[in-house]
Length: 221
Image 1 (cartoon, rainbow, N blue to C red):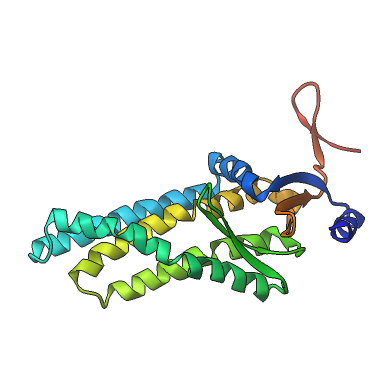
Image 2: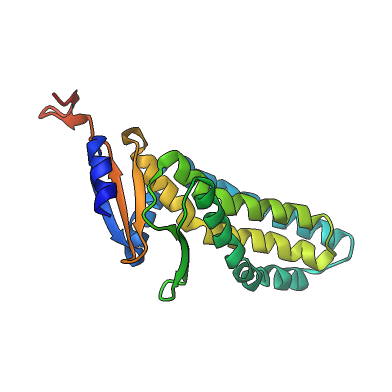
């Protein structure tokens, strides 16, 4: 990892943070606590899922295809269905890493948190790249849900909104890390992973603003 750090420092980057894969829940939570574009997007998509489920139920009930107990049962079946999509979710992350040029992409799981991941070993990723890598699975699987919905029977029209909602919840980590990056976007943050030691590193350009005694912002000399 030293050669990556040296290259970044030569470009003026400074250390921002370092977390083991198990500790990535810390920046994830920090990002989710921030009220920015990515946290708002996640909530909007979840609300959309609720509206989708409500409209589906209204249609299926009015046409006599499914009652409320059956509808809710099929919606809850979206939970195990979401777990079946985990391999596709992580593969999409991996494909996006490779799209940007990564050669050594690895997959794993932290069973304690039921956290699945795809990482690119020793491959620096910028903020613009990271947001596409992180959110690509959400986009791909959401579009698949929308496409399949049109061709499935009544049970599927109950299951798919549930699957969409539960998958969006599972994407909270992706939205959270994007929100974490977003906080430092003006400093052009970069992240890279040491897959051998299960550590993620974050670097950024120096903060050009500092706080003066009177509380105003001033540019560093």
